[in-house]
Amino acid sequence: MLKRQWIPDGDEHHPADGRIRWCWLELGGAAIMLQEFLPQNRPKETLGTGTSVSLQCEDALALLQE
Image 1 (tube, one colour):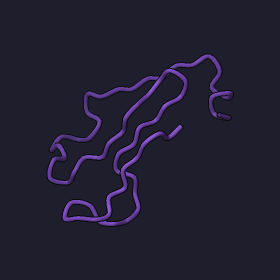
Image 2 (cartoon, one colour):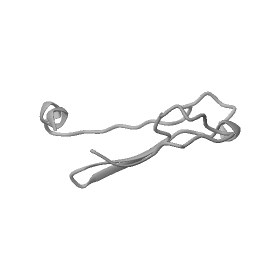
Image 3 (tube, one colour):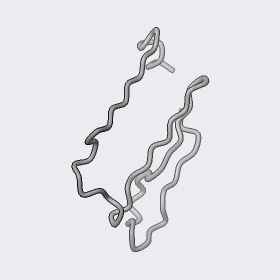
Image 4 (tube, one colour):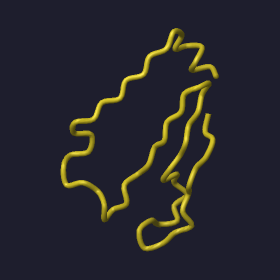
């Protein structure tokens, strides 16, 4: 469930396009924060290099229905 989000009004780094640039998601006792890089801070390496995220649950279909 989306708990918090940031949608910029628009500035030199982000156009006012209505896109979520940062968010906090929670479900039960689990939480994750997702954030987009600012253009000037974007790494030169291919995004995702050396990164892996794995999630496990007992009942994925029940989770999807929430």
